[in-house]
Image 1 (cartoon, rainbow, N blue to C red):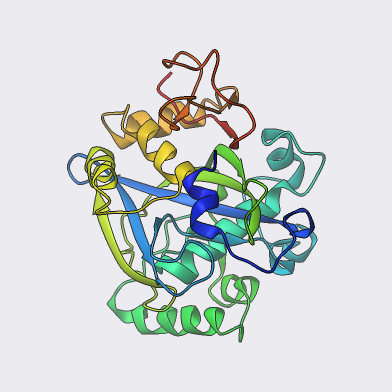
Image 2: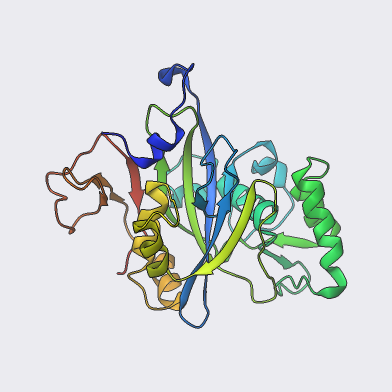
Length: 288
């Protein structure tokens, strides 16, 4: 049995066992509008990874996300703090920084605070064009996130990002990622919008509406993405979500229901005898 994650990415002319597993990070941006909603983006159909699918902002970790590279820029968490939270020996901070960088690249939202007074970044009319130029340069590889933060006297707002899951792409895909998922409330002074390159559409939507559209294939989601949205649907408000996520619940290992093929967690029907060799995931996002 293959999950939709693997089915969607299936290609020829590659050796599954030789596909490297890249580190990655993604952020679920949420808000009350006035009901609980999540920001979703549709990937271009021609992209190799998850083409045509609806996703959260995110991407691979690279050199500019490394802890040592960000030395001197306050982030509210040390690498030791971040690593301990994710049960890593080291390198945890890089996931946070990658998530912040990718969210700015893909959604135009920069999770940052002014260093002087730690007030939220306001990308207002006077600075919209400047930050759009930063975004374009970042996407083109002409500037790095550290440079943007230094030029604008900003620090990454890691304190309001909460770690909620880990998913590893199953063997059999031509692209494999070890992805850490975070959740954060959208900054009130910023408006997200897709990059109109890799991402061709974006929308705020309630978790239940996403689930309904996925059930009719009006929206196509990878299995882990859909499972995250289903868990988000257990909550009534963004405050509830953040309160639960910030309490850092223990990891729950996902399994795949033998008959329906859906991802299930402990306490859900069919978990006791569900399959353990289809999806590799550990989730903390749940109503506690």
